Image (cartoon, rainbow over the protein chains, first blue to last red):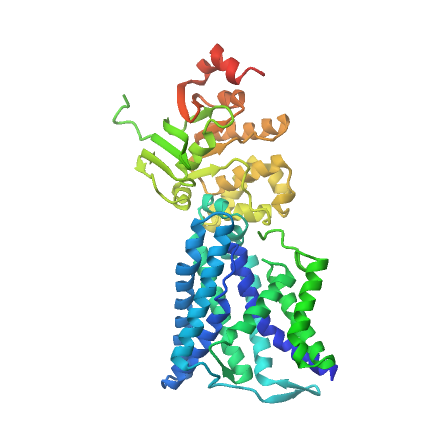
Length: 290
Length: 243
């Protein structure tokens, strides 16, 4: 029973990890939170629903949804985040924070207007359970974990072993020096936002695939879990974000097993407070982060 | 009067102003750096030397009648494009990427080169700064001050600049390390690299550069050959007294 729950928690944590790395990358490179980040996952999922309902076959439907998600992410960056870079000090953090909360609400309400504020069935659900070594595992979550693992490895390679990854880290660590060294910081930021939006989009589609339904407000719990995972892991650290996500997934599983599902979220925040009390900077030190 | 057949100067700045919240930091500064020439700007702390360089590099809001690089007007050009055009800037405080390794810093500097040019340039830079070769895999924040200064210059040279702007390269370094850094700058000057050097350490700057400007309260008060400035009792009293 316990192993079964831990396995479920581990698989679910792969989705949290996809959200957490997005939050941490944007915070790392810009020093601000994109509170609309998880709503981009919802946008992708609902765009797929729309495209499939409109009669598109799977590949064009995904391409349309990806294009819509990327376009929305660039609009959020341009209108809600970039103006903050003109400010200094607290205002440079607060302005995009408030503006992206607003952008997230616009996305949520916009989706509710278009699709109704209700649960919508996802066209490609895989909620069935299969037997893996004596344990019952959700097909959708298994695929989600596999996709997440591949994406996280690719992201790690991109950030740590490519020229563009070095530019991302350079902008994150010292934007002025990056400009001096000929790096177009706005371009690097825009590409990073688009990249994280694509990851969020994949996560949104995987949520639909795993649980069989999506909704205009589906991003909210994932935003909270992603942010908590990021803070537990150490803001600005990709590996930390993944470790934080796994911890949350496992803690949730233990809470469900021992205490019941109604205290799932409560225990996640208890763990967050404990980690902050012992290691305020998170589990993984991030010297390069701001 | 400049000979019209002569090549344009590496840098020409005409009436540069930098104002911070109503307070002028740089007032109508005009200067020229000819091709292959090393020019110093000396002045006390707060004279506006750093603001002047930041104004040229587009890092602070500045107004100028003209800023020309190699005869091309560049006033208002974004910093990253100035860098790509060939202006290397080594800022005060080095401004390294504290989480990157020495090798990664150098790669950032030379990232636009093709493979063969990159290898050749890396070789040149590591010959200038052998210490960096020994520290290739080290994270920059763990380097000594002198090594950090060498890396700041080295990564800038990786891009192959045609003009080098240097802000206080001797600041905070032990005299023996200053000797090493200035030894490298002499080599670069000998190779014909145009340089504009901003220094509080006037003695070192005047020894390296043929010509110099004196900056006081944001304005140029003198322009002369370095040798003449070093012989000038007023300059000796104000800037060279401790030597």
